[in-house]
Image (spheres, rainbow, N blue to C red):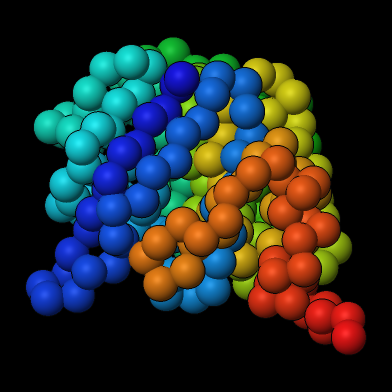
Length: 234
């Protein structure tokens, strides 16, 4: 198992945001974590990446405990996160952002990213903060891929994008997965996430309430009613 999470807890002061959840991701899988705002999805990703304090019975990547790992060590091991809001360097050019993505592990093939993201090649000398929202998300993905990740954590990649761009971003996510990169996807667009993923978890109020094959969750009446806008039949 590439990622193992057992009894993960996250507290913000007296608030228990993540309540002892278990999840796992096998190498080569695209697994989604869906749920409403405030469910604890982003906190889960940040805890896995050691960006926030947490406790767990087991937090392991590639069979190795990362419970005490430092944040900067994880990209060198191939565990990379694209944060909610993209997290690009807005004052740097597209090319400079890509170079920053390669920093953790050295190397990185910008030409390969330009081949995958032709729009970025056209704008490689443009200041990143002047790109459109969709272009910034492409840049965030390309920058992450510069570090040649084994496991990519994606936090709300479709947030704030127009429908056509959402479809394009999900096409890119599928393509990344097809190349063999393992993905844990947090996404509010439950339908598109479940259609892209092989397995899924549903998170509510800090707990995992449902899990299973993505196709099964997509047709689960509880998921349809709560997240897909479909009324339960009488």
